[in-house]
Image (cartoon, rainbow, N blue to C red; front, side, top):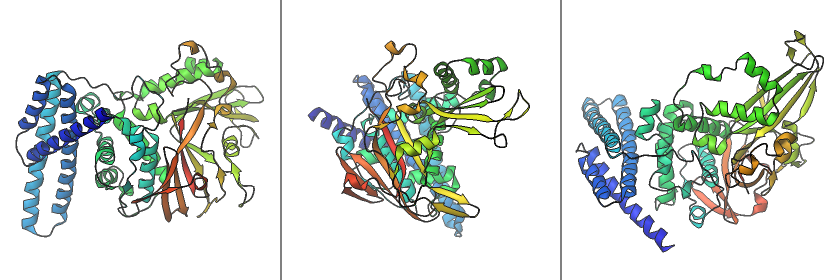
Amino acid sequence: MSGNISNIHRTQGLKKEAMRHAQRISRGQSAESLLASARSFILLGEEHHAKRLLVFAFLCFYKVGILTRLAHARAVVSKDQIVRRKTMEFTELYSAAVSTATKSLAHFIDTHGFSYPAPFASSLQYWDSSPLSSQVRKGLKNLGKTGYINATFQCLFASLPITKIDPGGRWLIGAGWPQYYRKTGRRSSLAKAFATLVNEYVWSDVEIVNPIYLLITIGYIQPKYKAGNQYDSQEFLLFFLDTIHKDTNRRPPQPDSLSIMIPDEREDLERLPVNIASEREWDRWKQKNDSFIVDYFQGQSMTKIECLFCYETLTTFTPFSILHVPIPQPSPAQRIPTQACLKALFNTEVLEPLDGWHCPNCNKKQLTRKEFVLTRLPPLLVIHLDRFHAYGKITNKIINIVDFPLEDLDMTEFVPSRMKSGGAGIEHANMEDPRTQVPPFKYDLCGVTNHDGNLTTGHYTAWVKCLDKWLLCDDEIIREGRSSQVVGREAYVLFYKRTR
């Protein structure tokens, strides 16, 4: 424990040093002072300290970039000509400093031959809440109807092993380090902004974290999420995961032709056993998509439709990050088991010709069997309880309590029987990797996003698991609650973590 504390103090010292250098650079001075410190660490044989210094500096440069955009915005709207001129000079100075520093860092990395493996690329292990990660529970400042964002982030912090990630930048490396940008040509501003928030959430001494930099970046990428308007938290989560996936994708941009299935491949897909077909389609997906989001959040579902006249079939495998689960509604007051909701989603149904599949073999709509199952489950399973339903211009909210388990949610029954055997090569499977597709598929709850109100108004909060306690996160306020309070009619998005 004492070693960990000394490492933290040492890292905090490095961070302060990096901040001082970044402040000098932001004032227009040379980046050589920062690089000189990094070289000193290398000469001492402590390359990991040099890497940490560079990473923290890069975070500082990103904040400087945010300040530059804010200053530019002020200059544009200001009516005072002197203020506009002075502010434009300020932004030009900052922009030049950031550009110079970033190029210098990239050159420094190339010169010294640093290699940065993308995080979570090759290995992943089951993780438990450590005392450190469980004690880091801080409020997030509400910046004007941003409760839906704050609740989502608290659940992400409670689900991901973020607080175990080395503060030396293992998180940031996969989130847009210069070598990544040179390789893919993509900018990764959201991932870097999220890394900044993670760093402040975990290592700062404040009790309430202000996510202003991240929210500015989110609003820049998707203007509708600017502070001042409330939106659906699961829609925001889907946008956030998709954008982070694009930012941290380890695959360079590739032509769409790689995703097009030729006729022979389509015929093979219909003939292959489901476990082999699923694995082949997952490999095809990962040729273009391989990110930290894929590692943790993405699973795969299979839809199979069959003409009941000629028995022609069409099988489709689809990746997902969130399961959108319907809520059967016997009566408004009845409590509904989670398994009933899942069975309403994953089932086999027969469609009448009017609603059936237009069979290419019969050349008309026929009586159709439709099957929907899970073929791959992720380490982190996000379940959206679909409470809102539109009837014309009116949107109703289902207020039934869904009895979801706090422990041992078993998803095994929703996987085809052929896949439950684990398939070929099971004896060589890494059973310590939660991505390994060997049953059982059991999950423990680690976070819940709650919504009180209707679609356009209301209030968002979050329940998060902290060791053996449950904490209610209400923007800036964190308070302890009882496990019996977690399951309620406000529960909206569930965050589950796979267990051994």
